[in-house]
Length: 467
Figure 1: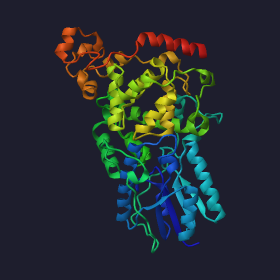
Figure 2 (figure 1 turned 60 degrees about the vertical axis):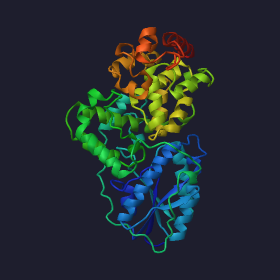
Figure 3 (figure 1 turned 90 degrees about the vertical axis):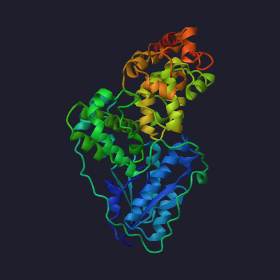
Figure 4 (figure 1 turned 45 degrees about the vertical axis):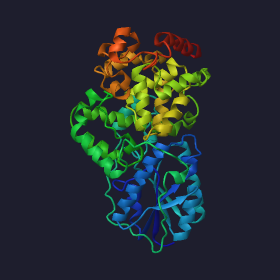
């Protein structure tokens, strides 16, 4: 075989600090490729038009960055276990490089690709780059067992040596007469998205957002991180699609002193913890980690779920979060917890319904993070905190984290003129106050679909019975 390599991009859509690309580009010729697999895009468990639209934008930016270096992004459609070996045969490639992933489906797919390449005498190389540490699953206890509680994982994670960063290749040489194809439109993939992306896609936008965050947001993160109207880095879509190197971000954050740096690095470690959990417990993608809660009986999906996903529950904090998700494809983490608690412990609906809804809309939708987060808030996952500690009161959460109502008033504008002291409980307004606020409860804004205090007691009994 000639000195030709393939760089298979997946969810690592950047050229900077990407070991797989740096290694592939050392060959005399290198073909960067992205394979559109309908098993993920349209026929899988969690198709998402908005996330795919964001991905396409990232791919266009990646193609531009590759062109600056003398290459282009090749586009293939089909199953990677077929298309990657086929491409290797067409161009005489001896090596294929990619960035390792942790989800069960990705690992099974990659094994199929490796087996097919081996039959052709082609060597596969999986490199780190998707996480801060090379492999989150190798962070183990002193007994060599996986961590099932975050805090000790976090302490061990801090001690793991980091790899060195790598430069973006200055030049990438394509073989002669290689037809690269063109990037499809969203409609070509059988998807439709009429909204506008709230995040500019691509590596350049991600790096600008990272620099802005490190310069003006990180220092206040410890104090402001639970404030939904601000305080978040909003870098999660760029981390999800690899537009920003997690290692570079963590390294730069670690250089700053103060509580903000440590608090933010801890959040990056949560991402890696959930990746490790998924590696060691692949069955989590279908069922609860805690076996005792697999017998919990959930209510059937119905009108209550519709109110939840539309943001019309009558609880302003919940509704604001759900409307932000529908509009932006993103939601502040504090709201993810609040709306998750409301679905599972006020409405008693299956956490998997919430998981699927989030994955259908989140630009940062990630199997490990999303699954881990939903199991955490449903009290069925790894961390063993008692279920009653994760029954969030939507009124007190709003009063604590959005005391002036900036977030709620933005996303639930019909409540714009409701007095601050009643904004978390607008149904307590008198008729005169409703008239002054131009918001009649039951007409302009819905009454609460459930009584939180009553449903909390129901949830306690449900979990107690399952325990």
